[in-house]
Length: 109
Image (cartoon, rainbow, N blue to C red):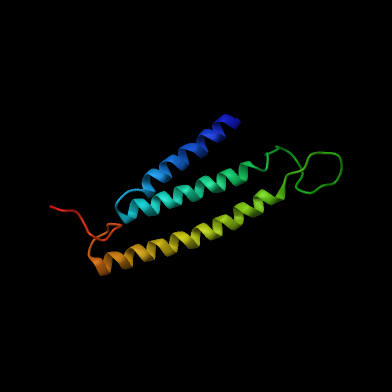
């Protein structure tokens, strides 16, 4: 199970980096979102998921670790705000520059 989780995080990071290095703004926004998902999944997996464990410590049974869950919730909120900001920034750049290239120069035809 750990190999599948690690492979999933690696694929999300690879796709996110590939899209973030593209020349247009929409793939950059998608790449940043995929990187955010990869970080959220990584943080969630650091909690060593235990099925059937109680959420609160009440004895000798293993409990769920609340810290990664809190970090993931915080990262989701920050990721949503970042995505909204980047989308508005790209829409404004598109309106002012007339194209959606990251460098603002456009394609040479």
